[in-house]
Length: 309
Image (cartoon, rainbow, N blue to C red; front, side, top):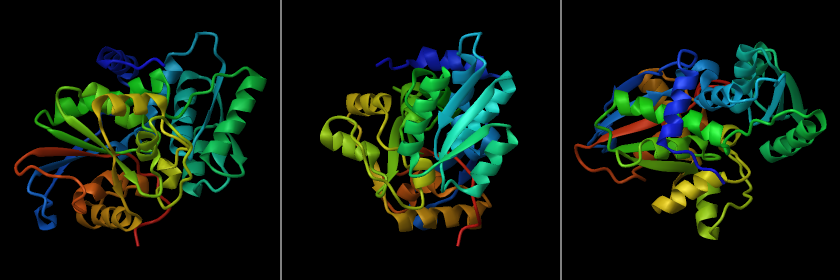
């Protein structure tokens, strides 16, 4: 397994420069929730395609051999949309595999970028399996949603922006599904800020892997499953977490939905449930806060179906 380093993330930033957005940050006051710290949100939901995924997708597409004519991908929706966008930008065809219950909002995004959608009965793991069969049959490169050198390097460019925009950040909180964004951030910010992955209790991929001593298949569910419902944690993310002795923080469904509601009510940021797990950990007191420290929370995606209820 090849784990990227900070220099690889720097190379990815140069590769995708001018194509992806430098997403904004927003300072919020959480003292009413008992959080005596400076809290800054990194709004990755304002990225092209509505999530951070475009960083890894574009870096992957731009790293393909010059003779490539098309790509395929599978995900709950965000990675598929990002690959569709990146492929169109590079003049490539794209076939994307999604669970048949993918949200209409995510399907509409994918279609808008011209990709061919293959709806698969089941979950993300089933879409990945079908995509692998198709890739092998058609001779197409499969762009994995979270566990390749190029995907993690691209996702890690978020961390380089955090370094520039919130240079005093001591703790970075990030929602974790397959772990591509978590591991990219941890590599980019190693020695500068602690990076804490947060998982829904209903999607505990990294938690189960830490318990087992290796990535293991996990049954997933809940409101955050369409973006955080990976069938297992990535090898790269597991290696990064295990090396650093990191254990994920787990948050419940109620906390995630309350954090989503707070984001909308307080700052009119409409995030998808999975993107709110990291903020939920802060609002529910699951993360120890040192008074006066600076905390950066990554709001990773915003491909929603409706307003919070």
